[in-house]
Length: 322
Image 1: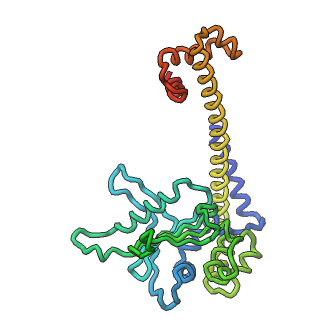
Image 2 (image 1 turned 90 degrees about the vertical axis):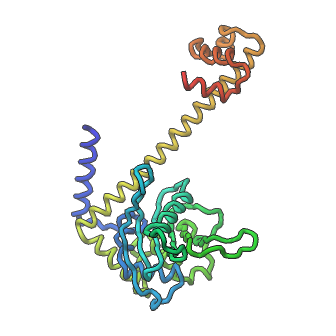
Image 3 (image 1 turned 135 degrees about the vertical axis):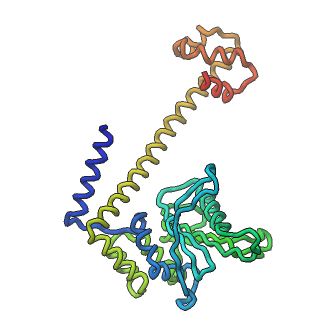
């Protein structure tokens, strides 16, 4: 009940902020703003031109599709992509913005691209009709070892570098590495887009979008978000949710470190007990030597005695089952 009341108060505070005169800087790293802006076909057209090195006339049609991906059966994983679209009726593309580090990011991108590759394919159709599928990951954390902010992956022979297929592609932008970009990279439109997405102030947003009609349109939409009460509320709600996610991750890390320390201490104690039992010491003597209560030492003592060939890790696992 107290938790519900806390959430209600927080939500009320967000509504007050949304209706106030407070100046809010809209950032594209905010998931709500990102989806709102990049689901605009005119805006995403400019981004795709920069990402895929396309001319304006080469983009004939962009169809924004349902980002919900349904599992084929009850046991398969479902997912929601940030942006899912079809380019020129023959290229499937999904774009994801991710703020917090994901240790399974590679597998996640593979999963979504594999699902997208076979989605809608009819039995009896030739495999050659399978459309190219492109997964675009915009990451606000470092994933690759390379200092480059942009990476493009496709299937190729590791030794000869001969391309096996271009129908399965992965593009990755690492926003934290923009500061390492070389002068040649900075002259590319993609760098300008990455800078816009990473921008933290209105001044940066105006500077990066200037002179590019697609990016200027994105800025106009971001200004609309900052001026509309409902849009402001939805933006702030996502901002709070992201802060909560970061706090949860930090708490999990602290707990993990604490648990790791606890595990290390128990393993050390098991090792000491094993050595003392090997010397023939009694339970009472071991407890006295280690300055531990007998009730703490006794279960370890009994397990070590009954399993003389087990390692300290084995004893630790057995201890957790008691």
